[in-house]
Amino acid sequence: MIEADIYKALGDPVRLKIITRLSGRSTHTIGKLSENLGISRQGARKQIQVLVSAELVQLKKQGRETQVLLNPDKLKMARTFITRLEQQWEHRLDALKHFVEDQTVP
Amino acid sequence: MIEADIYKALGDPVRLKIITRLSGRSTHTIGKLSENLGISRQGARKQIQVLVSAELVQLKKQGRETQVLLNPDKLKMARTFITRLEQQWEHRLDALKHFVEDQTVP
DNA sequence: TTAATATGCAACTATTGGGTTGCATATAAT
DNA sequence: ATTATATGCAACCCAATAGTTGCATATTAA
Image 1 (spheres, chains in turn red, yellow, blue, purple):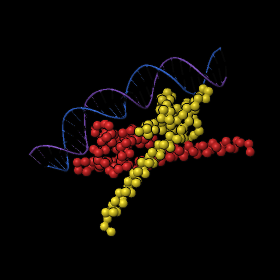
Image 2 (cartoon, each protein chain N blue to C red):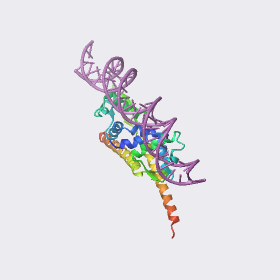
Image 3 (cartoon, rainbow over the protein chains, first blue to last red):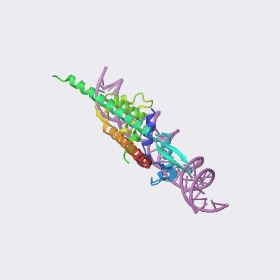
Image 4 (cartoon, each protein chain N blue to C red):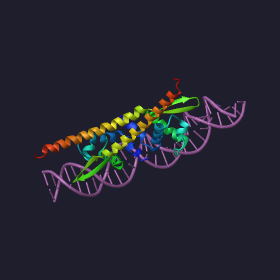
């Protein structure tokens, strides 16, 4: 079940904040991204690495700094999976509804 | 950042399997749901409890067994949040595109 | 009433995770 | 050449998590 890793990566307030920032502003360097997260730079770096491992984010070294890039495909995967769950659920409810209707005396 | 808790709950293969089962079939008892997860009943029970705490799932006791019910609202929240991230991202890309176009010599 | 089933609760272990500090290194600016 | 900036790497700590086993309890079936 590969999907779990994506949600696991999103399942931390710091990492979610990072992702949110990336989705909103243009590219961030590791340094900028690590600011105002309430933790140390190295702490932030570790969280960024988690996002890299989950492939939600990509690093691109440019000179002495490193850009952090969002990978929208992975976000899409996460959303698609949830959407599928919801659809199955609704389909199930529909089936149940029909079943109940069939049982009803006309 | 409340959202993180939802993803955290989804971020485990066992729990994701449970959610998947719940979305697909009709209501499960705790017992049935705990089968074939590769872990003990009590282990599974703990994971179900995590889902309960995250309000992704609800329990309803019926006699000696307990039904596990999916809470579709929470799934929707998770999906909505990701969708919003994606939209911000796209909006950002659009803005960038326009900026580039403005810089282009006609 | 006795037995079987469905579940709960608690203690314990091992691993993962989030975070820190300290130090090293590479690139850029003065 | 020296200094400042951006980042990397490793060791360490503590808390949380995933899982286990063992036993208790409530409900239903025989």
